[in-house]
Image (cartoon, rainbow over all chains, first blue to last red):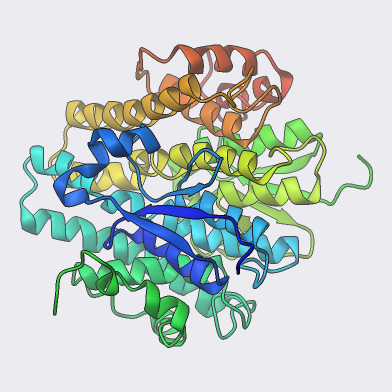
Length: 220
Length: 220
């Protein structure tokens, strides 16, 4: 990989969106110099990081000489276009649409509801810890049960979400499952997801990306 | 267009995600036979539609002989891959990443927070109309102001969000602006967005997709 572009990844151990980028880069054998933006210390709103991304959002992938790329879905598409092996999308347009649709069910319909900014807003509106936990459970469950229904019923499901190779859909699925574990939210009744998760989490690309193994994660 | 595939689009006049697909198909000169799924009458949960999409989600684009494609971002990518002229994404990977990133800021970070299912949940938690309106205003403003900041500061912005041709970013931007109008939410302080919106809404592809011009929309 001596000739890969030089990447910096602005990241934090815990975030689901950063995890997705780590997995994709691991799968493709790409290396990024990771720069920690400590969200707990508010570094995403600090002067140093705002020079990288004025919006204060991570992950941000910076290739030498180019503007930062933000938004995990956009970063995954970029990596797949510029480092196509192994592919994160199937070759046929209908298959690609199915993978992107499953990914969007998790990246768009599920994850944005369970972010710190939403928690801050609802807490100011009187949500206590129990109400927030019910909210998390509601949207994690809704998203994962909907994906389970598709995976269990659609013939394109294979060893992974789509056929027998890892795609963006698996990366997104794992990123949500990893969040449910961090937040200790149990979503029962998803046997197809459980089967695919077991297959993914045996792989080095996913293991190395595990939030609990990153710099800054709590010990033990 | 005699040789285009036969498409059915399961749709409802008001939804932002359906609007995006209509605009993209109009831009590409594609025609879909539109099938109304009346969300106000609960038809998305009716037996007939659940045979098309067991998840009850619109839009769903069905090409003869293939499973339905759901999720507007996935449908837009599919249309761009299968009917590439005019393109909805720029040719270079960094440009494509920027367009997809702006689109995701609106499709993922903004729109999912302001959906009927979220409203139902918050209403059950005691949100009255004023609290819901404040919630809508918060997330429409957050999303649009973040996009404005990028558009105003990044050199890749042109006549449209990215350069001088319509891209997926403009389609997403318009879909959110159209929602703010339907809900009568005012987001001031976005001059670059205002300029791009004025340019888009002068175009036939956007005009024809306007929710208020669709079958089922309220009159007058």
